[in-house]
Image (tube, rainbow, N blue to C red; front, side, top):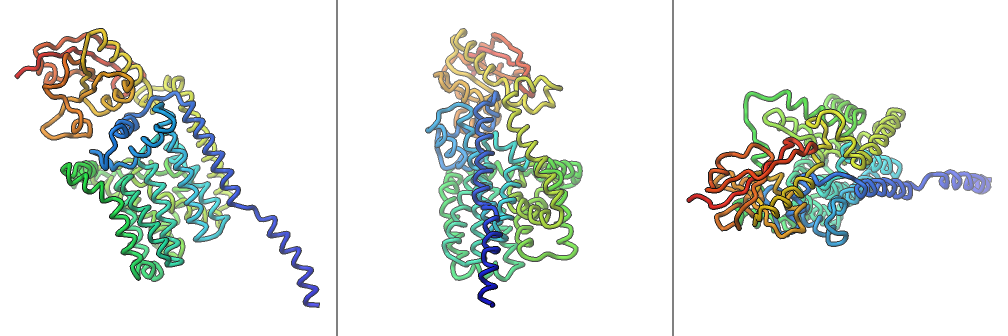
Length: 498
């Protein structure tokens, strides 16, 4: 009889197992659909490059191991993409949705290693549909490769703690090194791993027997060329990063901290960020168990640090972006267990938001007319092509040999939109030492070909026009879709004074 019972129950068990969805297949289908939507949106977008995007493209024309304000990985990625599909806006941006699909896949792998395929699937979907990810998928920025590298390093760390394999330590070190080449915020990973190891015996054991040393050595070797570049350029990137922090001391800026935390409700989603706060508060009051403690160690510290940064200076919403791969897993598992209906509502809202955010750039010229230009974010990615075209036409008409600008934004946009002309673009240095990459690499000097067409989107400072014996205003044009200034003025400059 026992054998017969086993025979009778086996088909039932097999049937239940066969009904379990293959979450890996569903993840590929879901992320693939999102990727196709976002790539189509990038291709059909009617927006110009944002000035940061144009700057990164300009860097990609001159490959190096470092740049004034950022490490080099973003430029390398753009150069790789444009080598395949050209220099159009969509090609410059195409790596963003692709890399976010990779990031979501590694969030799935990390969650599956901690829990199971089901939690892994929903964690990957949660991350892929975060409002901040939906927005960032339409732009190319340093956060895109940073989050991809971070999610790979997080997965490797989880596997290292579980298996103590040297291969996982090597993967973690390589991912961390590449993350540092994307953005120095990757250094937070060391803090998170240190906190996890401080609380957890298994994590401490994972770093022994040379595994921690191997990971650190590989990470250092990967980032070493950038460190050497900085040493050769007066540690320009480090100085810029420190200047961005700009701690002013007392008094503290409570409003800035509130603004930063408020922005996280929009970046992570209102329901998910509220759930994260509740989970973190409960962990402080009652403690936590693994693997939730590990996920908190890789998410909460950055949010706390950047909130402190906002208190003493300022902080942008994306500065805590590396918190969200682990946070996505944490809120997914808790809400699926305790509040599945709330989880479904949040996911539905994020899917709708992802669709709207993807389609908005396609209709950008019409949407930019809504409301005031100063409050419409689409205005910041419209009009630059027209300004550059007007500058080129004026330069041709006046016989100018070069274009002079007075800020980083205009320089980046002109370099991109005048890329098919022979007109050199130079920038007026604002001080004795460079304040941005263009001042370092293409400043105005007396040897710059003349006459110059000086293009400014503000009132021309006398320190520039009075530097030349000839300074004639040769035109001005209004560009309603360029923010924050909407009047371009053109001056023909020649004969610099001694």
